[in-house]
Structure formats: C-alpha cells, structure tokens
View 1 (cartoon, rainbow, N blue to C red):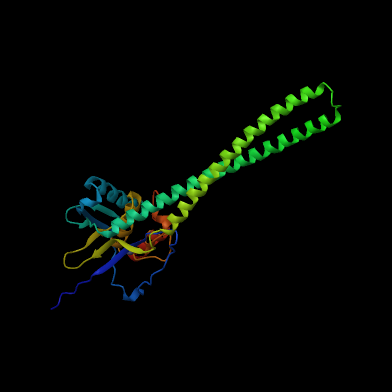
View 2 (cartoon, helix red, strand yellow; view 1 turned 45 degrees about the vertical axis):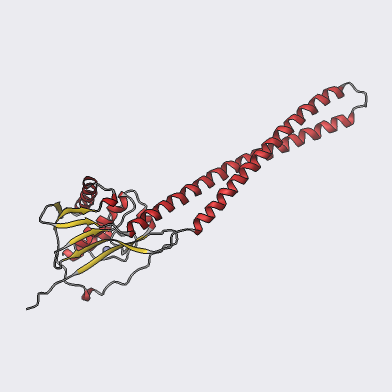
Length: 290
Ligand SMILES: [Zn+2]
C-alpha cells in the first residue's frame, strides 16, 4: 500500500522593495482543498545548520528563535514551543535572495538618509532665506530714511557729515548681506546637486519583486522542517520566524495585510523594530484549534 504523504508547503514571502509595493493578495486555497489540520499545542524545534555567509552565530539565531517562540506563548498560554532535539530542524540556507535582501535594505537606507538630509538642509536654508529677506527689507528702509533726511538738508549743512557716516555703516551692512546672499546661493546649489543624486538613486531602485524568505514544510519524507532563506535584519528575521511558527501551528495565511500571517510582508511590517502578532493571528490559531 502506498504511503500517503501529506506535504504541505507554506511559505512566507517578502516584498523586498517597499515604496512601490502593495499588498498583492495571493489566492488562497478554498478551505475544503486544504489538508485536514490538527490542533497543535506543542512544538519542538532545534537549530540545524546556518550557512556561514549569513554571519549569524548559533547563539544569535537561537535567541531570535526563542524570542519568536516566547511571543507566541505569551499571547497563547496553552502553547509550548520548546527547543528539543526530537523537534523539527530550523536551517538557514543562503542564496541570492539574501544578497537581494541586503542590497534592497542598503538602497533603502541610502535613500532614507538622502531624503532626511535634503529636508533638513532645505528647511534650514528656507529659514535663513527668510531671515535674509527681513534684513534686506530693514536695510532698504534705513537707506530710504537717510535719503529723505539728506534731501531736506541744505548742501552745506554740517549734519550731512553725520548722515554720511550713517550711510557708510549702512553700506558695510549691505556688503555683509550680499556675502550672505552668495553663501545662501552656494547652499542652494549644494542641495540641488544632492537632490539630483537622490533622483538618480530613486531611478536605480531595485526592481519590485517578491521573494520567498522562509518556509515551513510539514511532514514529507524527511519530516517537518523550517528553512530561512533571507532576512534584512533581526526584527525581520523575528517576523519571519513568528510567521513560520504560525504555519507549524497550522495557522493558514490571513487576508489582513497587517497580520503576521499575511501571505506577504508589507514594507511597514518589515521596518518595524518589534513586530507583534495581531489579534487576527491569535484568533486564526484558536479557530483551527477549537
Ligand atoms: Zn506563509
């Protein structure tokens, strides 16, 4: 008799370029086509190979895995997710996906830094321009007042000396102001140059794409296993582990784009410093465990 193997592949994909990315909801299998689920309350896992190209130590990986398990257990007290050698392996398999993740992350950091720099500099330049305009208006007013006074004095009036001194001081201030104007122009040019670089960078954005970054395979010849292919930083690894643990607990993909069990991770989720399971994720576990 043929052995019946239920191979259930559930994957987590990242949309690795965010700006353009939207949630593309991938069609889910109708519930009656999904294999029968059983309520899982106890999970055992162990940390298997980590490709050295990840530059991730076993201790670091174990900490993130333990934290993801702890978060599930914190919100669902019935769960026991423990490290044990009789559990399923968690492997880190390195390929071009990780390179793409890191490239996309680096690009995003650059774009963010440039954009910050541009808005800070523009703001401070605008303030200084405003200040310059005020001073210019004030000096113009003073000059006009002097001219009026001079027009009222007879050509040989001794007060003219005094006015001449004032005019001299005014001219010095105008010269200073002109210097400041040159500086402002220079700053404006610098900002425009960086603005052009920024536009170039935006055009070089890595193509929007979707990649599978984690996988939980249930059953099969070698038994269940979890594989991590790519992550951009520790919070995103944590998020992937939360998601894959969800699959190990038989939680299906959810339509809610903010859920950890959404089929694709949004940019917002990927850039969270502390991803969290949502009420929908927990409800989905409860539903199939009733
Ligand atoms: Zn998934």
